[in-house]
Length: 259
Image (cartoon, rainbow, N blue to C red):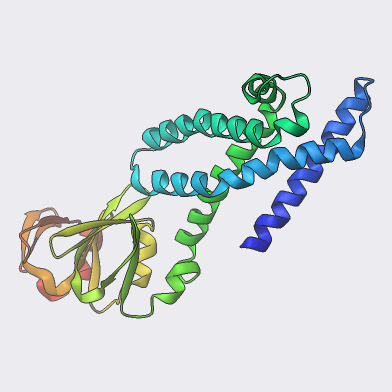
């Protein structure tokens, strides 16, 4: 991952510097190549410093905010915060080098913001996109990344402060939560960043069954199944939870059905 990050940083820096050179020539104001490259590297080095908090924040937003509107609003709010952090850091670190004509680092902030608005916007959007793509890949490939180390014993779920391991026998049922899933175990509910469709392929088929497009249950937690007519039914769990069984998944319960 570190190698990929470094390669991406070098590529983006070089491409941006070349773009700056070409634009300068087009406008009839050619610039020194090494000066352009050094300034561009400085700009993206500050974004490299900000990458970790931005990535962690974006991951929390994408995992915790269930509504797409809420996720978009929170990520959009992070943009001016990241921009302000970038300008502050760049001005503080590089004022002695690039602050010619600016009496203080603060006097340098406005021109830095305006001159690098395009680069900064690209950097922020690229970081958010990288987080989204990584999460999307992990959800589509549950046997890779962290899912690869789970073995047959349970699920590793990312929570604030680290990971929590939930054994199969602890899980009562799992509910769909937008693009994610909410695992109910022993009175707790934990949000995992994998979809219900991805989880059903990981769960032991002999112990779990999907009963609705929005729910999976552990079979030994079923206390009763009551017909609602037209092929639908209500599944009552030993925990007291009542879930709907749709006729599409009716055959999954087999002997549990009483009518």
